[in-house]
Amino acid sequence: MNKFLLIALGLSGGAIVGTGISAFITVLGVLVRVMDLSKTQRYGYVYKIAILLGSLVSTYIYIFELSIKANPVWLSIVGLFMGVFVGMVASALAETLDVLPFTSTNIGINRWIYLWIIALIFGKIIGSIIYWTVPGFY
Amino acid sequence: MDNKIYLQLKKHISIRSGQTVFLHDVADLLCPVDIKKKIKKLVIPIDNSRDNITTTINVIEIIEIINKILPQAVVISVGEKQVSIIINKEESKKIDFINLIKLAITCFLLFVGSGLAIMYFHADVNMHQVHETLIIAITGESTSPYWINIPYSIGIGLGIALFFGIFPMKNKNPDPLEIEMFKYEKDVNSYLENSNEKSD
Image (cartoon, each protein chain N blue to C red):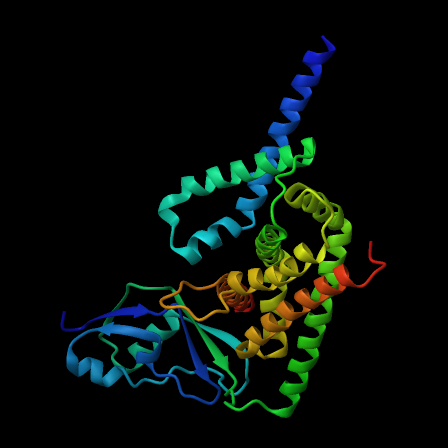
C-alpha cells in the first residue's frame, strides 16, 4: 500500500514539475525566439519532442547517475549549448527587457542601446569565467 | 459632393519643435480640388515652442478652423476623433561629450551588474554541482571542469547575442528589444493622450 502511495506521489509530483518546466520555457519566449531566428515555426511539434526528451534524459542521468564515458570534447559541446540556453533565459527575463527601454528613454541615448547589449554580453561572459576560475565562489 | 469634405485624422504625428503644423499634416482630405487648395495649408494652432511634449487636437477644433474659412462646407470625419502631436527636440547627429559620459557610465554599470547577476544566479541554483554531475555523466571520470565551464561561459554571451539579434541577418523580424521599446513608447503616448484629455 505504501508503495502505491509513493508511485502516486512521484507521478503527480513529476507531472507538476513537467508542466512547470514547459511553461517556464514557453512563457519566457525562448522557444518562440529560437523558432523565429531559425524560421522553423512550421516544425513546432519537433521542439515539443525535443523539450520532452531533454527533460526525461537529464532526469534519468541525474537520478540514476548514468555515464556514457565519452570524450571530454562532448562535454565542451554540451557546455556551449547550455550556456546559449542560459544566456537566452537571462535576457528573456522581464527585468532586462523592461528596464532597458525605460532607462534609455530617460537619459536620451536611444540610438546607442545596442552598445548596452554588447556591455551586457561581455559582463556576463567575464562574470561567469570569474565564477568558475577564481577559487572560493563555491 | 461639392461642399462635402471628408476628413480622416491621423492617429499621431511627430514634428520638430518650432515647426508649423498644417491641416494636411494631421489629416487626409477627400474633397473637390479647389476646396482642397484653400484648406490644406490652414495652420493648426498648437504650442510648438516646448520640447518633448504631446498635445492633442480634437476633430471639433479642426472642423471649427475649416468652417471659419468655408462656412457652408460640410465636414464629415471618418477617422480618429483626435490626433496627438508629439513634439521632438531636434536631435543632433553627432554624439556630444555629455552623452558619451552617460553612455560610458551606463555601459560600465551594465557590464559589472550583469557579471554580478550571473554569479548570483550560479551560486543560487548550485550550478557547480550540476556541472560536476554532468562531467561524471559524460566522461565517466573527474576531468578538469574547465572542459565544460569555459564553453558554457562563452555560450552565455552567444545566447544573449542571438536573443537580441546582434548578428546582422537578412530580412530579420524585429527583435525583442525593439518590440519592448515600441510598447514602451506606445504606453507613454497613450498615457499622455489620456492626461491631456482630462486637463481639457
